[in-house]
Length: 102
Ligand SMILES: [Ca+2]
Ligand SMILES: [Ca+2]
Image 1 (cartoon, protein in one colour):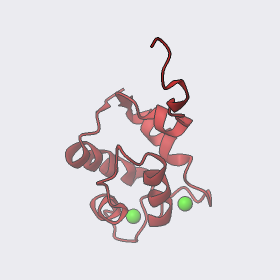
Image 2 (tube, protein in one colour):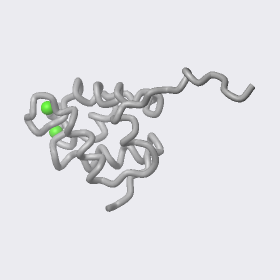
Image 3 (cartoon, protein in one colour):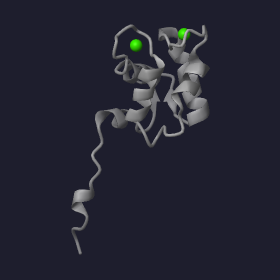
Image 4 (cartoon, helix red, strand yellow):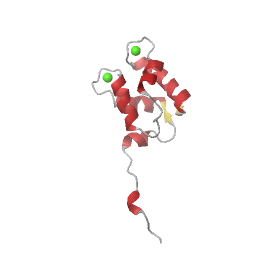
């Protein structure tokens, strides 16, 4: 009776682990930048979508289009470096993601 279900251990990848518990603004930015696959310094809707998929479960209610809309202050369809702060705001308000100031 001692050892049961030992092979049902869920394997976590590093992306989900980074979002366990609180994270700092810098950590959030670091995490998000990993999904900037074309390295143009902006997060497109597709890139945000991939980021959200990587942490599925936790952010399953997060629609990337909503995130872009909430963050994209100048309306060009991308979340640029200085707009990431808006995205962080959005994530905290509508997802309950806790991001600490530093
Ligand atoms: Ca990009
Ligand atoms: Ca923008």
